[in-house]
Image: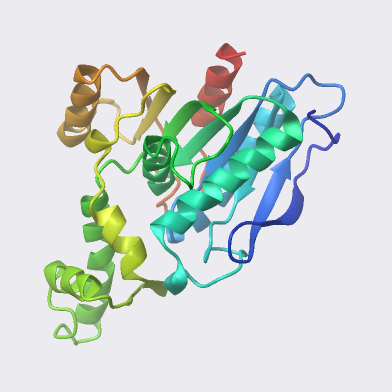
Length: 287
């Protein structure tokens, strides 16, 4: 059952495959009914560092509302065991399976996913796996996506450009040459260092091949939340195309646009209180 009266997080290490994963668990207070459990699937790299405050604030709000929340550093990330250069996309999906099962065992409540940026794309691919070995015994009730990465190739191209920009600033633009050259190095099995992160081919290549149109979630309701910094609140064409494809594929999803800062990418740590409020409302409606 949901347990432990605590408004603050309990830090611990969870055994998962090779080594341990660092976790923060936000339990539901003893005097609050437990309505469900939520696994927060984090973004990648500096986006994760920029988002930690928002993730903690959302977890605290959901716990007060009756939802136990688990935040996990994936293999090779944050304070978890391993190095990023040894991580794989499959490792990360296995981490989600272990976390979901742990949450269900701990709470005996329905488990949902809350994915931010690349964490949302990871969640979609995880849900697509169905009954594969790295999926949980626990069925997933719903997925809430915060500013999802919908095209892995576009995401990595932007990430690769950080390396190219750094080389240009240092006066050495011959090492990588182009994003195509970086991709070829990954295809050759090399590990690429970008912005202080050693990215291996077994992690980058699966991301590069992923597109949300190819992994429409089935048997799981999806709440897609988009943050726009402009007042127009219009979905960009590429993202609207995915939404249209999902509608044609009869995906059970709703899409909400709201104004706010891109907290995962701002120079200073920032918050989006409207996003927290809306997310709490979504989970409350599902009880």
